[in-house]
Every structure is written in C-alpha cells, then in structure tokens.
Length: 177
Image (cartoon, rainbow, N blue to C red; front, top):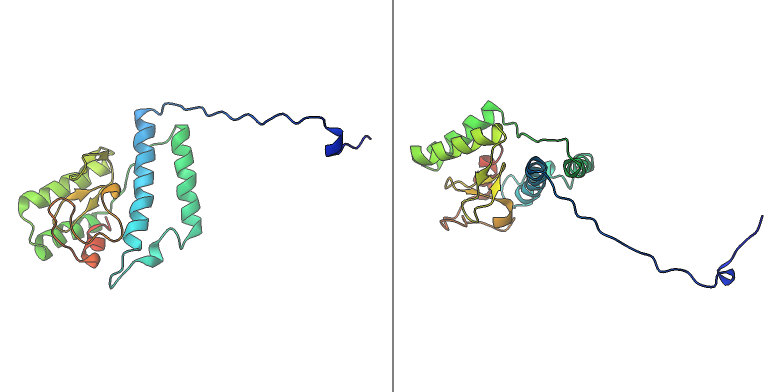
C-alpha cells in the first residue's frame, strides 16, 4: 500500500462546476408553485400576531411536516406529481359564512370566493387580484380579495388591493380552508 500526502501532489486541478437548467412542464410548474405557495402561506399566517396566532400549526415548529414539504417540492421538480388542494365542506362553508355574516360581504364577493375555492378543488388556477399571478392557492382577505403570498407578509394588516384594514384573527379564520 502506498500512502500519498499533499506534498506528493504537484498540482491539483481546479474543480469544475456546471449548472443545467431544465424546462418544467406546465403541470410541474403549477405543482411547484402550489407547494411553494402553501409553505409560504403557512409561514405567513402562523407568524402573524393575533389572539389566536396559530404558531402551533407552523411548519417551523413541526420539522416532520417541514421535511415532507421540502421533499414534495423536490419531487414536484422531478415530474410525475400533481397537487390538488383539498378543502373540507365544513371549512368551505365557515369561510363563506364569515365573509357574509361577519364582514358583510355582498353576494357577488362571496360568489367570487366560492368560485375560487371550487377552482382550487379542481386543480385550476386563479389570479391574484394585486399582481395577477396565476396560482391554485391564494389568501382570502376578509374584504373578499384574493392575494398571493408574494403580495403580503406577516406584517400586512390591510388589503393590498383596496387598503381596507383587517383583523389578524379574522384573516386566519378566512384562510383555514
């Protein structure tokens, strides 16, 4: 057996790095964006300070779920996966009742939110009412506007579309769908 040391080497070749970019299919892009948006929406809603913060539901506090979310993102980039959000009828109804009864939204606005939830259940895209990006999952603001996770953060306390202020707890309840 021959032992080599650094002194035995005349020259070490520089490492070479390369980046390969692949084109994702439409389904892969939608799946990736849906998962990334879901993770970001969890982090935003659970880090907002309200009477019921929801911190116990944060992916940051539950490493098992955070690791699964990251794993799902990786799989989404490899193809062969489609994500369809599942919303229970109970939460769907509670959100619509909250908008209508507590936030006095008219039938047109409630229908817009209802149609958004229905489209999400079928894996279809909806537009952010602020920037126009098409996603499966959007935030429902108590004023009934639909906003993507890029147009707000955990400090946002008013709708980016109409500037109407909202209560954090009501915002979190609207987004439990």
